[in-house]
Image (cartoon, rainbow, N blue to C red):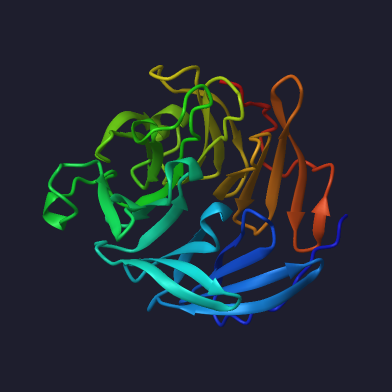
Length: 333
């Protein structure tokens, strides 16, 4: 097994999220203590750089923007705010934008592909999804779905019944220049649905499709995460979905077609998070026991579990766990 690198983050609460930036040189950790801590990665060494204090409640998630925008990170918190931070110089960060119009805890945030500009989507515990974009002088805010009446709470339509739990951007098209009307977004919720949204040129969002994950997979649980597979020339679309103890993948052969369940895997314990690599060939999922399972696609388009990581290191090959269904996941749409 490959030995893990561990270090004391200095947080005084549970760590809810940890994200490395696009260049692989900086780590951000988000904690229940309300702080985000920034670390420079130098080989096996982690050098503390800054502590971002802008929340009054636990920070649930962080997201790095593309390096083309400089060092920019967003943090989502239970205090009903999302903060966008920018590094002015090494160790010195400023608040670029504070979004405080949420009506519940901000459960998830993710920056859009850089070709769409500096935009970020956020999911809220009141069921709403909001997209915030840099309009040059200030930040523009659009509610998903849009009513055309602005961001006021009275005009909002809930994206989900219950809580919205996760957001994931669709990769930009590869056969045409990206435009504002090509933006699509997936959101997940405690209503056991995944919704697909599309924007128009004015930035107004409407629902394209909705996937009843509970009915399709036979599990009436929260959808805790959804991850849109990066395209990289692959025809069609694939969503990885975490619901209860199951990891499912839904495919769409081409735009406008219906989404269908390709296959699913019972992991034997709650699946919390799914993450694709940049090429869309490796899928990592985090589980209730703190371990991470890693799936990789072979040349035939079949993804198999080939490694897992826990507190003792990274292990390969990965042995089956008790109660786990060893179903191959075909990720091709």
